[in-house]
Amino acid sequence: MRNQTIRWLASVLLAQLLIATAVYMWQREQQQPFTPSLLLQALDQSTLKKVVITDHDRSVTLEKNQDNWQLPDYDDLKAAPKKLSNLMHTILSMKTHWPTATTPSSHQRFELTETNYQRKIEIYSHNELVETLYIGSSAAFKKSHLRKASDNHVYSAKLNAYDLPTEQHAWMDKGLLKIDTIKHIHYDAFDVTYHDDKWTLETTPKSEALASLTANQTVIEMLQTTLANLQVGELVAKPPSISTDNQIRFEVTTDRTLTYYLMQNQSQYFVKRSDTPQTFTLNQADYAKLLKVKELTQPINTEKTTTSS
Image (cartoon, rainbow, N blue to C red; front, side, top):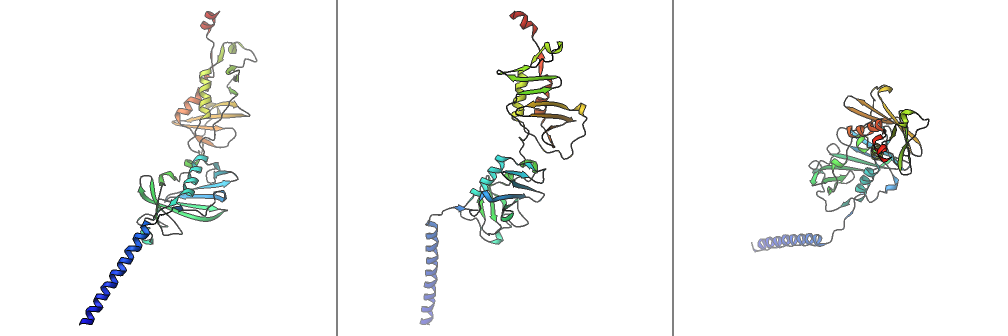
């Protein structure tokens, strides 16, 4: 009986020692400083060639062609440089902190499985898939749970599914038709040229109609501002059939001459430029401003001229 009691006490003591050792090791680990490391530290941005972002309904592909990123499934249109740069910076600078979970069983709960996710990001280097990221449920304000396909660890990162749209037009460079430093504008029978810090109506060949007109400085300056900040909407896959007579056409010259075409189909507005084959949607406000090209000239204020003389 005595030996049995001794063995029991020894077992209890051993259990206590094991628990104490485990607690000590845990406390020691917690006290050690944690150094965050880059989640994708093996990736070199200069070698990246393609990024595919997928949700459950669609996907968008961004592909690098020489120095520019394009949308190969969207008429090879140029991707928005700043938006793409922000994405690359966010992905490549993400650092791992203590994982939220480390087991495969947690992936379903955080929406991080191969079939259940908010977004999937596939990253290609030299045309080879080198990493896949799953973006899952919200972890906090502007944060999401994520994991690498090659790892069971779940992390919380400053990345939002909302900031990873899968619509093609969301990644398009919407300023592709804007233009700066206009020197000359032609509309209908009128030509205005920027000279000596002001716009002047060309009157050659001379005519009575032109003699009574002058360049509308206010309208022209508004046109300049609108064209310098022009943002299109979406690519129009099937442009509406609008006759030439119902299109507004004007030319602008910088170091080259470009023609803009404005079109309206009921409550929809469109714009096209001579150096691109595509047609794009345009918001009503910018359409109305560009339509002011019809007021490129204005009558000379004869009353003011008479008073001055």
